[in-house]
Length: 307
Image (cartoon, rainbow, N blue to C red; front, top):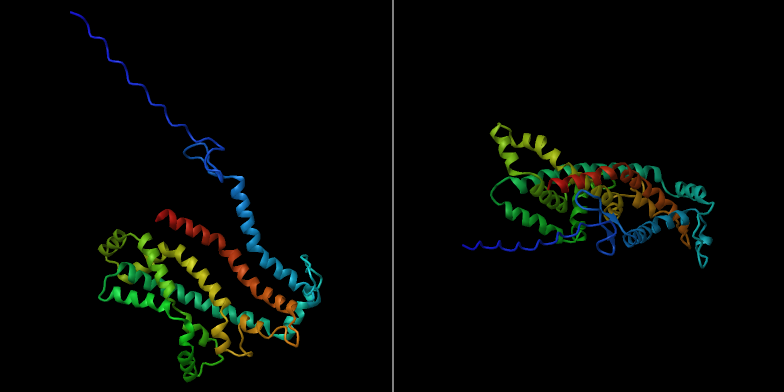
């Protein structure tokens, strides 16, 4: 009996080559496989550097303009280096406007609006995201629909209301209308839908926790990254607001943006003094972002990983 010859073995498929440093798309370089860090290529750094230059140049020009005279700014081409008149222009700002009181008022207004907006929008976002009640969809649609209404349409009735309450030229006239925003409600709702598991709420209810206890003990810690982002956006919006404060407040109780309107008056506007006041009004915002920027970015990344 003749023995059968064994069947030939199938040819082995070549394993796909591992990523090596320097390989990959032409705008970045990958690391050497799983667990390796992806590093940027020269084009990625070139684009980032160009974007940084474009973003930082307006602030640098503010410093240059604030440190020079109005005649220097009128030269063609203007100088791109800082000048010796920075302190002189700061003194002119303090003489023409009560910038110290304006900074304090802006800090009070922006801080109160930020705290109120973050708390109220987080509470409303939690209700729209995780609580079931009659009319939830209609109320959410109505809330989002208010974002389509130009704020200028509500100026006249709002001013009539604060005049009736005798709040004209008082800070509460600027604070109270900004304590909640439709964007903040929608933002926190979307964040909590993705970051807050329903099972966690059900487990808390089985343990006997009330809705308020769930909000303060579970929702707030989970929503902290989103609250930080919303707080930073709200603070910057309230700090830079000009339209409503210039209507509701006067030069006796100004915010920073209202006080800047008083600078550089005359037949020819003194742009160097205006830029010096703008620089003083910008520094607190940069300070807040410098102190909280790392926590905000870290919170965003933490929330992205959890989601």
